[in-house]
Length: 149
Image (cartoon, rainbow, N blue to C red; front, side, top):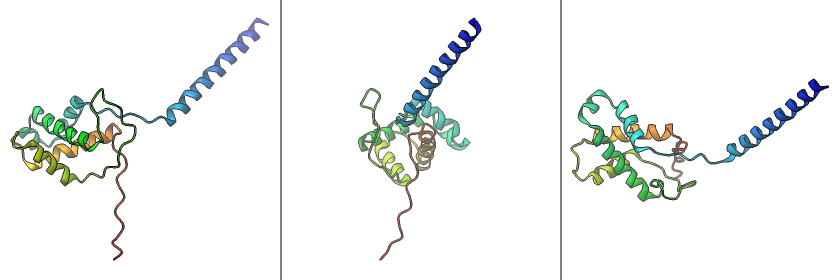
């Protein structure tokens, strides 16, 4: 009789655990995952992926300065917030033109750094890989429909 009681108790405990795990899994499946851009992590991610010639020209500080400027621009666009600010769970749809991003960063740099357009383009391209890796970028925008005129 004592053995049957232990088996019944174990079965009840297992059922409660399965129910709790199922409830948490269902809740997490519907929650929006918050992506956190860690600047130090992003700098390392980008710097490690730069081609040898670019990494010879760019210091970690220059990579960080380029990323900081880009983040400031994204914050101005309303698609990024600083640590401690309100968390964005939704934001405006933003279609990123890589050439325009490079141009905006170059203008914002305003000769503060001795970097080439190519260096900025490389840093921003690898930064895009970083934000994809942390889940902060959605799917690519569909191609525009052909001009019907």
